[in-house]
Length: 119
Image 1 (cartoon, rainbow, N blue to C red):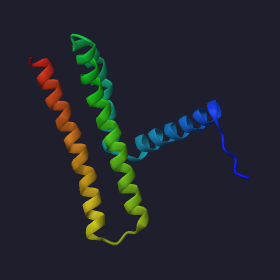
Image 2 (cartoon, rainbow, N blue to C red):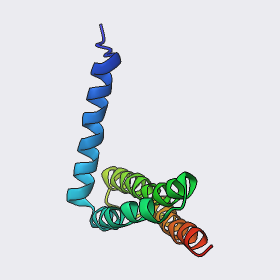
Image 3 (cartoon, rainbow, N blue to C red):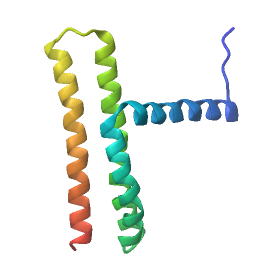
C-alpha cells in the first residue's frame, strides 16, 4: 500500500523539496545567483518606492517572477542535459525557449518599474 502523506506532513515534505531546489539552483546556476542578488536589492526598493499596495505588489511580483522563470529554465536545461549529450534541434529549441522566457521576464521588470516609477 502506498504511503500518501496528508495535511501538515505533506506540506512540510513539499517545503523541503522546494528548499532543496532553491539551494541546488543557488549552488549550480550562476544566472539564478545573479538574479537572486538583484531581487535582494529590488524587492525592498520596490516595497519602499511603491506608492500603494498595488504598485508595491507589481514592483515586487515582477522581480519574483524572474526567479520563478529562471528556475523553470534551469529545470528544462537539466532535463535536456539528462536525456543526452548529443546535439539535437529540439533540445536546442527547448533551451532557447527557456532562455527567451527569462529574457522576457527581465524585460517585464524593466517595463513595470519604468511605468510605475516614471509615472
